[in-house]
Image (cartoon, rainbow, N blue to C red; front, side, top):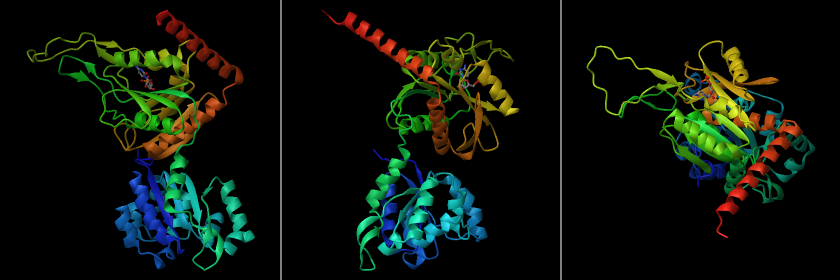
Length: 427
Ligand code: C5P
């Protein structure tokens, strides 16, 4: 399995001799399925040429902050937004000092300042520079800000000395970056996600459906699995590959989705309803293909079950998260939906304007009873990870008594199961 499949890794290369190892790092990141873009500082170009990184990453290398052409192609904000992880390797003592002081006077420092993704730094320098209290303080500051410090290793250095200061080897950096995605935030939790559209049959060849691509739901399932959860994904018809470590159940209609969800929900701690479930289905599905005889044709529609509301109404309901795609009064409509369906959380988004349905990017306003968080426009994979982090935090904050109720529920279900097992076991 490729541990970084589909991940966007933005690699910052600064001016140290270890920059030559970063060429191999790009190759290994891509071997693990990552998409890699490279930003180089002016000093880095003294050691390795941009052409090397361009050839290995398959993309032009980003070099300038104040170049209008480069900014128009993919500017510093867009690069920062694109990144799932920003890895600075090698990071020189000078570059570390510059990001500590919040500089933004070249492309890489500006990207660091604009990036809300996980940032990892792989220091590489002479061991005395590494041991200097100025560097030690800078490293401490970065750690306090949540920046991951990868290494350095001990060994012989390019300056002829020996000691701490060697950049970690590319394979070690690849493992460390992979570990950044496996957060463990939902370790041991059981999560059920619905995704995609549903199809409501009119006759054997026609159906009513919607524009949902399933990408957001699949991204949420992926993020939950990476966070350590045991994930079941109930999906309508989509053309997407099943995320790693996820059990997928394919369905077509809302009725089938309802049945599949209810079949698995008893064991779940969290239900995330991302599917664009059709609200109505034809009252009658014709057994034969309808003929175009009359000038007009009326279809009678009947309401589908509201799967999310049904789950939230269960006596031992899991933590329920809904999605609300809205075209107007987004927040108030979403809050009303959360109240009406008795949800723990709702993720609202505006549809249209290059986001939402059938688009690569999305923005979400996540609302719960006592709070809210705005998640800015970005790729759906990154957004899903941010949402999963919020869900994990809210779940952690549920009161002890609620947690106890859930645990009792699971114990009760297991007890019931074992009774059934013992009944079916021949004596
Ligand atoms: O009411 P509305 O369709 O806007 O609510 C959206 C939320 O409800 C989504 O989370 C969607 O997955 C869920 N839903 C459902 N069953 C339906 C309709 C919507 O689970 N029949």
